[in-house]
Image 1 (cartoon, rainbow, N blue to C red):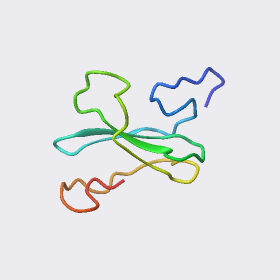
Image 2 (cartoon, helix red, strand yellow):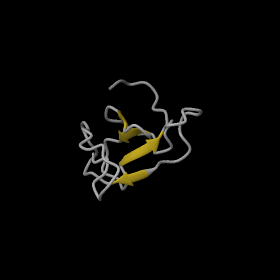
Image 3 (spheres, one colour):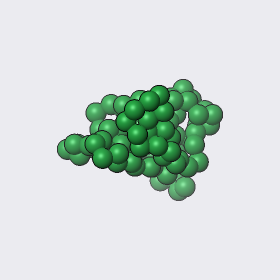
Image 4 (cartoon, helix red, strand yellow):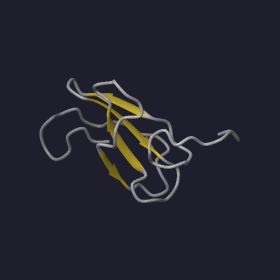
Length: 87
């Protein structure tokens, strides 16, 4: 993106990030972020419902998606079932 210094604000590592996605399901507010490199856990979600500190203290969940995502779409806002809040 640019040649300036890389900052590790999310605790994931000093990597290039894809555009962030946020989603509020009526109860929790989540921030989804992905680094653009093929490493384990390159897609993470943070619960930012309280909004009292940044970066949030630890990630809520993670997954490995190839060399990172180029974009994200939230697919569900149900609170029941195996695919609740699918990404």
